[in-house]
Length: 134
Image (cartoon, rainbow, N blue to C red; front, side, top):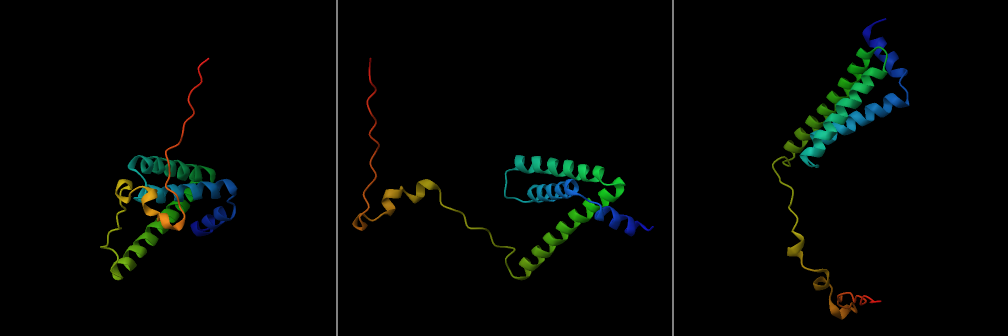
């Protein structure tokens, strides 16, 4: 049996546990590499990805096939990211920055945005009941 056939056999014998670990490893890997979340969240995602990939490798017999499958998945994500970056650079989108949103104080309160002629009433401060004394 060649190495490729052994890898295919290991892939055919994967169960729900292995698929879940692979999904967790790839999702956490994407979070760790992306810039959406804060650095501490990305660090925890990197640790979770490493732990899931280690669990994947340990749960597939032989474990070397698990390491190869994890590496193929992460390399595939890297190739996809590179392809998207190249296409965006060719379209001229690579140098653009995302628009920044206004801070909440600059937008003004909600009541200033509502025209009073439309039947809307200005919001009032809530009336609090006085505390009872015994």
